[in-house]
Length: 635
Image 1: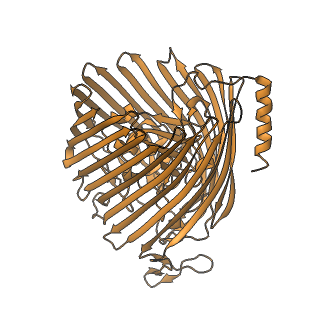
Image 2: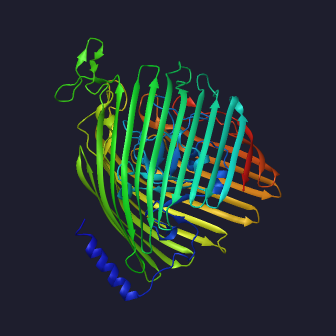
C-alpha cells in the first residue's frame, strides 16, 4: 500500500497544477452521501451506484421494519418476507437480502450498518433484520455492489447504512404512532429528541405483534433505542448509543405440515464515537459491539458477540483532492449447544451407520469459538477540469484464520453537463467464511477458503425539465468462482459447505423520480438480473411504482410491484423458480386532523389478493388492512 499512495498523489498534484480548476460540490447537487467515502460528498462525485432514501419518504411508510421499505425503493435489492410482521430466524426464516444476486442464505454477503457501525451476528456471520425499525431512521444509503475497500468483511455484495435520527435544533420533539390491522396486528411507537447547549438526545420504544395469517405464525417484538451526543467544541463531538430488540416467534412450517420450533431472541448493540472536524481534515474513532442470546424449544441455545474498532481520517491537502486513510479491527465469537457433526473419513466421505450417516457431538459444542480481522486502507479522490472526479483505493485485510488479502477499487465520474453524470467503477468484494460455515452443524467445513467477486458497472444520471425528472440508469456485471455453497444442495446425504460456487451475473437497474404537477410525485424503479447460476431470494425482473399526491389536508399514495421469475429453494432443496410472476397493489390515505400534529391513516396491501410466496411452502398473506394515528409535537 505504501508504494501505491505516492504515485497517485503525484499524479493528482500534476493534474491539479495543470488545470488550476476544481469542480464545486454545489453544482447540481441533489443529495449528500457519506457511506461511499466516509465523509460528506456530493452524490454525483461518487462512481458507485447508491440509492438514497430520505426522511420524508420513511415517515410516509406504515412499515415498522425498515428493510421491506428499502427493498421497494432500491432497484436490484430484494428482501424475502413470510408474513405481515416478523422475518424469524433459523428454519423457516425470511429476511434474506439479495443485491444483484448476491447475499447468501442466510445473508452473509450484504452488510448492514447503523451510523456506519457493522451489525453482524458473531457466531452466524449475518444480520437479523427484525432488529431494524423505521422510527429510528433519518435516512438510508444503499451501496449496490462491493464496498469491501471501506468496510471489509461481509460488504462483498453491498452495504445498507441506516443513519439514525438526531435533534438538529434546540428544543424537543415527540412522535408517536398507534396502528391496528388484520390478524390482530398491532404497532405502537414512541420516539422523541432533545437538544440544548451542544447536548442531544434521541430515544424510541417500539412494540409490534400479530396473530399471523397462518396457524402458528404469531410474532411479537419490542425494540428500544437511545442515542446521546455532546459537542465538546466546534471541532470535537462525542456520540454514544445502545439498541435492544427482544422478540418471540415461531416457524409455522410449510403449508400442510406441522409447525416448527418456538424461538426467543434477544439482540443488542452499542457504540461510542469521537468525531473530529478541522479546516482541512475530519475523521472519527468508533468503538462498537453487538451481542445476542437465542433460545429454541428444540434445545438449541447460543450466545454470540462481535466487537470492533474503526479509525479513519479524511485529509484535503490541496484543492479538489481528498485522501481517506483508515484502520479497522473486528472480532466475532460465540458458542452454541448442542452441536453435532457428521462423521467423515480422511477423504471427506460420510461414514455410514445402520440407519444412515453417523453423527457425534462436535468438539465445538458449548465452546467459545472466535475469529478476528484487521484492515488498513487508503482511498483517494481527485476532481479535475470541472468535468471529472477520479477515485482509487486499496485495502489490505488480514484474517486470523485465512491470512491476508488485497482489495482494490477504482472509478470515475464525468460531467458532460450541469445536469448529467456518467460514472463507472471496478471493485472487488471479499468475505471470509463465517464461524457457522466453518464449525457448526453437519454442513460445516473447516477447510473453506474466503469468497471473492469482481464487479464492474457504468451508469448515467440525468436531470430533465428543470429537475422535475431525475433518472438513474446502471449496467453491471459481476463474476466470481470461489463462492461457498452446499454440496450436495439437496438431501440425502447431509451436505457439506464447499468453495465450488460460480457467479456470473449481469443486469440493468433504473430508477426515476418525477414531479409533473404541484403536489404530485412519482417514484419508479426496475431491475433485471441475469444469473448464470441462480441464487435464492432473487427475482429476474422486479418493477415498482409509487405515485403520491398531496392536496389540502389529504395525502394519497398507491404502490404496485411486479415480480417475475423469483428464485428460491424448492421442495427438493434445489434452486429454481418458485414464483413465475405476481403483482402486489397497495394504497394509503391519510388526513391531517390537526395540521402538522395529528394525522390518521388507513392502508391496504395485496389488494388483488395474490397467492404468492418468497419461500417454498410459506405463502404470504392475502389482502390485509392497517389503520392508525400519528402524533407529532415539537417545541
